[in-house]
Amino acid sequence: MNAAADLTDSLRLGEVPHPARPGKTVLFFSDWQSACQHLRDHLLTAPECLAWLLVTPEYSQILDPHDPNARWSYSEQSAASAGRTAQALYDVYRSSVSRDAGDAAVLGWHRCLERTTVSFGTSGIVTIIEQTVRTAFLPGQGSPEATSASQDPDQQQGLPRERGMRSGRPGRRDQKTSDRDRQIREQREAAWSRSQRLYYRVFKPAVQSVKQSHHRNRNMYGKLIRGDYALLKDVLPHLSQFKYEDWLALRQRCGRDA
Image 1 (cartoon, rainbow, N blue to C red):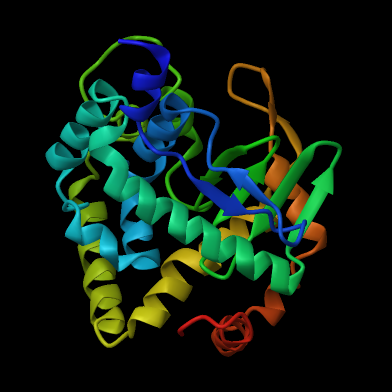
Image 2 (cartoon, helix red, strand yellow):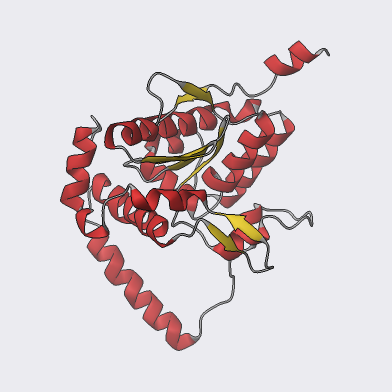
C-alpha cells in the first residue's frame, strides 16, 4: 500500500480556528497517533469522559461513557485502525474545541508566548497550540497521580490514566460519611438543569484548576514539566466574577446556548 493510500485510510484530522489569529485555522493534532492518544487520555478516560459528556451530549450516541469496557475497547480499536473507527468521537471532540476556541477569540481568553498559544472557552476546554493543536482537555478532572501513571511504559490492559487512580476502599465509618454526603449531593443536583451541571461540574473546576496552576513545575520524580495553561491566569477574570449568572451572560455573548 502506498503512502497516499495510508493517508486516506487513517483518521481525517481536520482543523480548528486559531483563537488569537482571526481567520486562521490550525490542524487538530499533528497525526492520527497523537489524536488517538488524546481521545484515549481525555474523552475515553474517567472521570474526564463524564465531563465531556456534559460538554457534548452527542457523545452518548457514539458509545456509553459510563461503561469502562466499552471505552477501553473503543480506544483499542481506534489504535488498530489508524483512528478510522474513532472518527465519530474525534469529530465531536474537534467541534467542541472549535466552539471554545471561538469563545476565547470573543472574550480574549488566550495568551501567546513564543510559539505557543493557550486558550480557554466557556465550556472549560483548555487548548494548547504550537504549529498544530498540541492538546485540548478539561482541567480539574482526574488526578496528577493518574496522569503520571499513564506514562508508565509497562503494558497493562485498561486505560492508562485510570490505572493510576486510587482503588483503596474507605473504612466503614468513612464509607457511611461518604454515602451520606453522596446522597445529599445527589438530591441537590437532581433538580439541576444541563447548564448548571456544565457550570458546576466542568467549567468551575476548570477555572479553579487554571488559577491554581504553575507554568513550570516538577512531577513526583523531579522532572521539570510544562504547565502552559497557567499563562491563562492573567487573562481570566477573578473567581469572584465567575458566578453562575456571570457565566450564563458570557455564554450568551459568545452566541452559545445556555
